[in-house]
Amino acid sequence: MTTLGPVLGLHGSPAVSALAAELSARWAEPHRRYHTTTHLRAVLAAIEPLAALAEDAGAVRLAAWFHDAVYEGRPGWDEERSAQLAEARLPACGVAPARVREVARIVRVTAGHAYDPGDANAAVLCDADLSVLGGSLQEYEAYARAVREEYRHVPDELFRTGRSAVLRALLGEDPLYGTAAGRDLWERRARENMTRELAALSG
Image 1: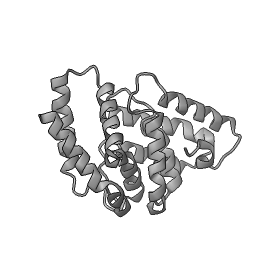
Image 2: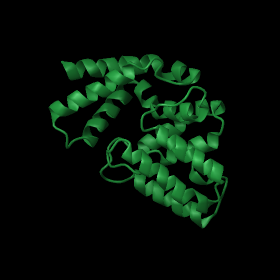
Image 3: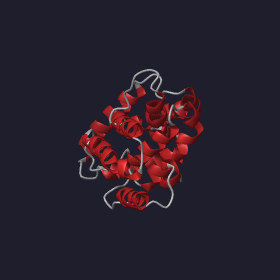
Image 4: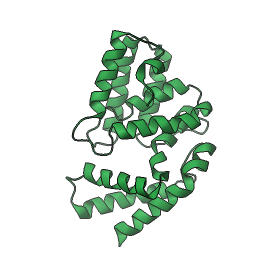
């Protein structure tokens, strides 16, 4: 996994070490089931084949570290608080104000994965975040189980209704991935996986 120090371009800084420890602890919180360190590692790995397409790959990698750093299962609120965390912590690590703003901006984009055409940084981060949808059958089924566990407080019928709505919305995106590389890597299998899950939820 890409470590935080090289992403920041700083090594041995107490502030960087403290931030790395804080973020690692956040991603390892016991209430998480899908938005875990495993997800963070997967997003960071998925950024790499797309990194050359970004305007600031460093900002995208930082945004990956922060994009679900605050997670309470409250869509929109989680992303906003995560962006605020980046704004609060990164200046002390020597990150330039413009990059701090960009990191926070694209973290906020992940709330709905909606961004303007040509927004390369947002496209790379969102594609990496959704790369799990295009995984193998085994990987996708593990992802779907983890999502259900994360919403274990929601009754089955309500979960099926909500999850089906999410899947239909994703399937309605054409294309699902904003970069050509993302489409080549994940689009076909993502649609197959989501269609299969939707059928199972409706059955």
